[in-house]
Length: 113
Length: 114
Image 1 (tube, helix red, strand yellow):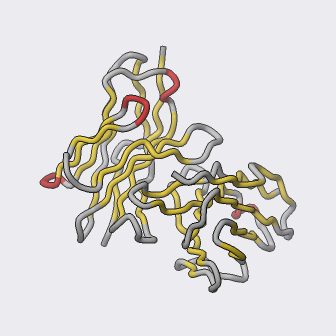
Image 2 (cartoon, each protein chain N blue to C red):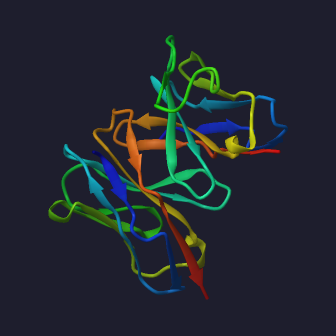
């Protein structure tokens, strides 16, 4: 299975600011996925990031709020923009491995104050 | 519509006792099924998966799960729980190992008491 390094692991941010989360994979992957896990909730897919094209966002998520970059086959970033307390969540990046299902990064625990 | 249901929000078991976590799914195609564990403050770790073949699958940490197509279930079991098993457990279903949409259950929180 792929190994994913995600950072920061946690952050406390002021409302109105932005945070960029980085995700590095130890192998080349076509698609990377960004999930949000709100407190006490399950995982919700934010978007799918393909290298060389714009990310595909799920219903309820927009590029202006969650811009994503995918400059190469091993790296992606997710920015949470103009944050509010409602954005306090765990954000996880993941990749799909052949016959492995999803592999997840360790997550970024974001608290907006 | 596709969905995954984990009926038990929270389960408490004694250390050494057996464990079964329930998962039911609704899916139009042949499902790929997964169980993940999330320890406090951590990301998700894959426990086991089912794609095809033997309906009883073995995973890491002594866990196993059984796929029952007639019941649309994929329950997770462990014969003897350890205190370190206390965590959140998520069941997930997808269309294929290359698909980009998985459906996660809402999770079951496991507490282990001495």
